[in-house]
Image (cartoon, rainbow, N blue to C red; front, top):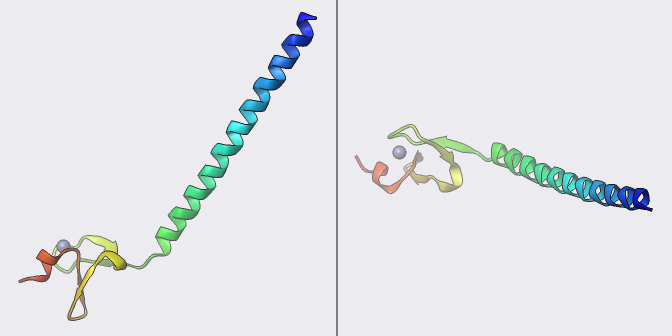
Length: 74
Ligand SMILES: [Zn+2]
């Protein structure tokens, strides 16, 4: 009787463990995809300080890219 109970507990624990692992794995996949997307995003270098940032976040002036409004001056 106790033996059966033990088996049941072990099975339940194993089930939880597997579900947790599966969820973690799915989350990792999502993260990897996100990182890949970021890699494909075009990046530029600020002409003033050399900072690398996505083109969408950069400020363009006269065909030159800068990281912030301050660096567009000078
Ligand atoms: Zn800059």
